[in-house]
Image (cartoon, rainbow, N blue to C red; front, side, top):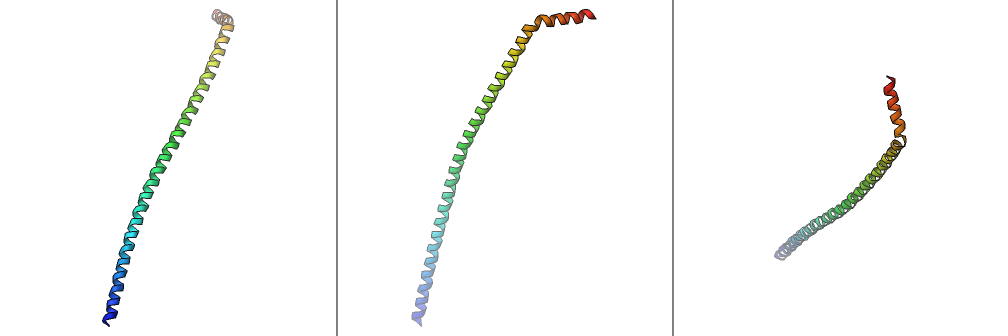
Length: 103
């Protein structure tokens, strides 16, 4: 009977050691998982920052191109108005004088 009790005690002791080893393994796995998650999060944040920088650069380029096109269109319109003014200056002046004198 003592032999059975001793063997049961040994089995219980081994089971306790196995549970303790399993707990240590579980903690190590959890710590490794947390470390990897932080590492992945850091990598994702860095990649996101790079992508945002690229997108910001592209948007700035597009905005500059649109501004350039607007300036070009405005310059053309101003040139056309100046040309029309120069070509019809005498005619406009005559119409103004005519309207003033009609009153």
